[in-house]
Length: 295
Image (cartoon, rainbow, N blue to C red):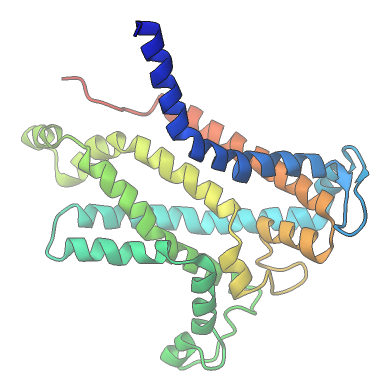
C-alpha cells in the first residue's frame, strides 16, 4: 500500500468516525439557522403559506419599542449576573484549589445547580420567592412580592442565575489554576511578593485564556436566557414585562403573536450581535493572553 493510499484511508476512517457528530451538527445547528434566516424574510403565521417580505421584518424589529425594551432588560440582566458570577466563581475556585478537607464533595455540590434543568430550577425558585407560602418570606417573616414587583423581579431572577452559574465558572477557573506553574509563583514569593501580589501579577495574567472563555460563554448564555425567566415570571411584571428578555420576546413573537418572520429576524440579529461581541472580546484578549511561559 502506497503512502498516498494510507493517507486517504486514514482520512476516510477519520471522517467516518466524525460523521455522526457532523450529521448531528448539520441537522440540529446549521439547518435550523438556515431555516431561520430564510423565514426572517417572510411573513408566516404557521397556518397560512409564507409570503415574501424582503427586509421588512428586520426594519420592523429594529423600530419596535418592545424589542428595544427587551434588549435593555437583557443588558441589565447581564450587568447584574456576569460580574457577580465571575467574581464568586473565581473566589470559589481559589478556595477549592487549596485542597481543603472535603474539596471533592464541594466540587460536586457547587456543580449541581448548573447540571440541573433550568426550567425545573425556575419552578423551585418560584416557590421559594412566592409571596404566600414561599420559603424566603417564611424565613424573613415579611410578605414581599419578589416576582411581581417591578423593582425586585429582575434582581430576583438574576440572583437565581448567579446561583446556578457560579459553580460552572468555578470549575473552569479551577482548571485554569491547575495549569499555573507553581515555580513561578514560588519565585515571586522569594522575591518578596505577598500572596495578593502573586495573585494579581502572576496568577491572573496566566488565567486570561480562562477569563476570555468564561466571559464569552457567559455573555452568550445571558443573552439566551429563557427557561428560568419563563418559569419564574413569564416575562413580567408590567407591560412590557420587567423580565421580558430577548429570548422571551422571540418566544412571544413566534408563539403568542404567531409572527414567525419577525421572531426569526430578531433571532438572526441576536446571533449576529453575539458573534460580534465574541469577536471583539477575542480581539481584546488576544494581545493580553499568555498561553505558555518560556523556560
